[in-house]
Amino acid sequence: MMTPKQLVSVISNTCQTLYNLRLIASYKVPVVEELATYTRVSWPSSNSGACYSNPFGSLEQYTQWLENKEFICTLFDFSIVRASYIIVGSSIVGHSLLYWPYPVETKMRLDDENDACDALNLFISSPSECSDSIGLRLRSPMRFDFSPDDATDEHPEIHLHTQFEHSRIFVHAPITFNKFIKIIFRTFYHKAWLANSQIESLHEQPIDTAKALFSPASHCIQFSWT
Image 1 (cartoon, rainbow, N blue to C red):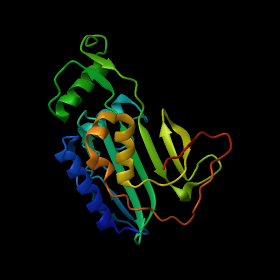
Image 2: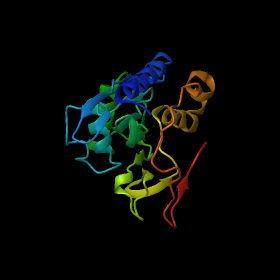
Image 3: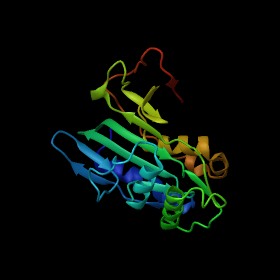
């Protein structure tokens, strides 16, 4: 059980911890939005409705989110982390969590997010002209969605999007923000994980769900962890 105020505190405190460890470049304190039947905790946004104007996984979408600061935090390498939770009462009933590695490798010095955006825009506009200094990494975003109200045989209640918007890989349980952060660092930044025991020590508040078990669709890749 977790109220919106408690969730905001958890996300903010975790981001501050990572910022102090120099593992994130910047972060946003989440905002609480009261809607008709639920409450949403998400990143502050000044561009409502424009979040998906570019195709999923495209360089243009990444650049748009970085330029418009449509994220919870950026990591030290300018990878993006987004987190949005749907709460009814004090129960989390949905979420969307995204990790997107910075999609190019550059010999240019990147001091801040503006420099990171400039490098991306330069590559998008003239990849051949900057090939000596900027190269495409071809690393896919990973978006974990928990959306039980949309569940069908083709749409697992909890799933991972990667590579394609319509690819949905079954995931066995919803993910807390701190669990998500641990997965990112242990999987993609193993040296940072080993060097900073504070990450593993982050408290994980369990998510209570109406169902104890979630079943994958047939012929579906499955992800699970402890």
